[in-house]
Length: 637
Image: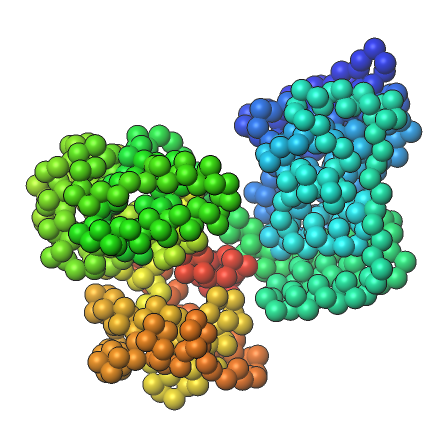
């Protein structure tokens, strides 16, 4: 049989062929074009000499198959090229499905995307009963649907509702849930039992789970379409609407769906939304790679038990660090510890796990933990004098190789560093609120900062499951530097007579999580004013904000700002506006944000266009389907 560095093929005494996938040069199995071509060649040879059975498994220690190599998608320039790539894979998978012998796939880890499409071509799918064994179709997160027959086989295996759950939602299912849905036919206790289960399949002892039939398919589609329409527009996010159309109509079967799937996949691949989402996926991966390594940090000391400091401490303890939390107010520490418990109970569920994490989080009002901490994170008030006093006191109490970090959102680190005898120890770790939810951390450095400390802080962020972006110290760093001029430009437009609701609707339609005027109110007009003083803002905007702050109308937290507020909801009319007008407004309001990103790149504040775009997607909420502000602007041009 044709050899391949990625597959081991053997035949046992009963005539059953065992294929073990172990992609050469990678820590996990990925279906690159070369790997897939090798697999198809192997199946061709097996079909030519039919075995008594076929078993497919992974030889990796981690995961099963992590799908296709998204980086290779950029090789396809036309729909014809996409379809030419898909055709032989479809033929290969159909050959597996048509084999006259039992076929079984043994899943012992993550099986997503093309990996699950491959698995569904086998007559039986066996998994291990472990949270680490998961299956799913994440393609919609790339603006696509499964392209190797997966949308058709999901329907055949699971029925309409099950197929929609996999294909439309894009979320992975743990093994037990996948078994309940019908994706996995049989579960075993652990990986050691998989081979035995394969033998049971050969002996006809394991049945395939039957598909479920929807009582009212049209109603299922209508309900799903209404849910999608609440969060997306077909012109900017076509994939979910196309998937619903794909599953609509009478007399659906696997053959019809498979015939539709390939042209639909190739069409979606060429859309701007898919290009943007695939870029966002790559940016996420690139940022994560920058956070890998050895941080040499086990004990983190946080100074400041307010919302930011308390939540940083809570997340650090939940991520496995020993954490001491210091504040002048013991009441503030008590409140932070209570918020931490609430977070752990919500996230971890298990009381034993909650107690274990809480044991790593210690109240430390006197700051005794400074003496043994590997990393200090300061999160006190945005006041330069206070921060200087905190750092001067901490420096003499800490180990000389301990990192000293500030969570400041705008103050240049050089000004804080004047309080230190060794300013090379100082870096910034700017988290975003709410810390347990938002993934971005700006890791800030000065010309004096030790490179080793910056690198270690990046790794710590990775351990906290955050996405760190390296930034040079400058007013506003990257995110606030880009975001605030966008917000101020919207205020200027409003002062010129623009309807604030129309401005907000334009940017929500563009894909932002909320409009700029509502965002000002959410952040707080006092915070906007103070940050604007640091980075600069138009005089009219400064005067407007100053007047509203003096009047006590500072946004959501005061109940009134640019809008009136009912708790967390802005009270404003939701008008109906011309789409072309809204598009023009969005382009205009985005101009300052794009300009500041380009300037920051040119000044070396961030390392690259990729990192500027990543910071805006993960920190500002710039729409992922647009691939970042600079990418979007380049594509638009």
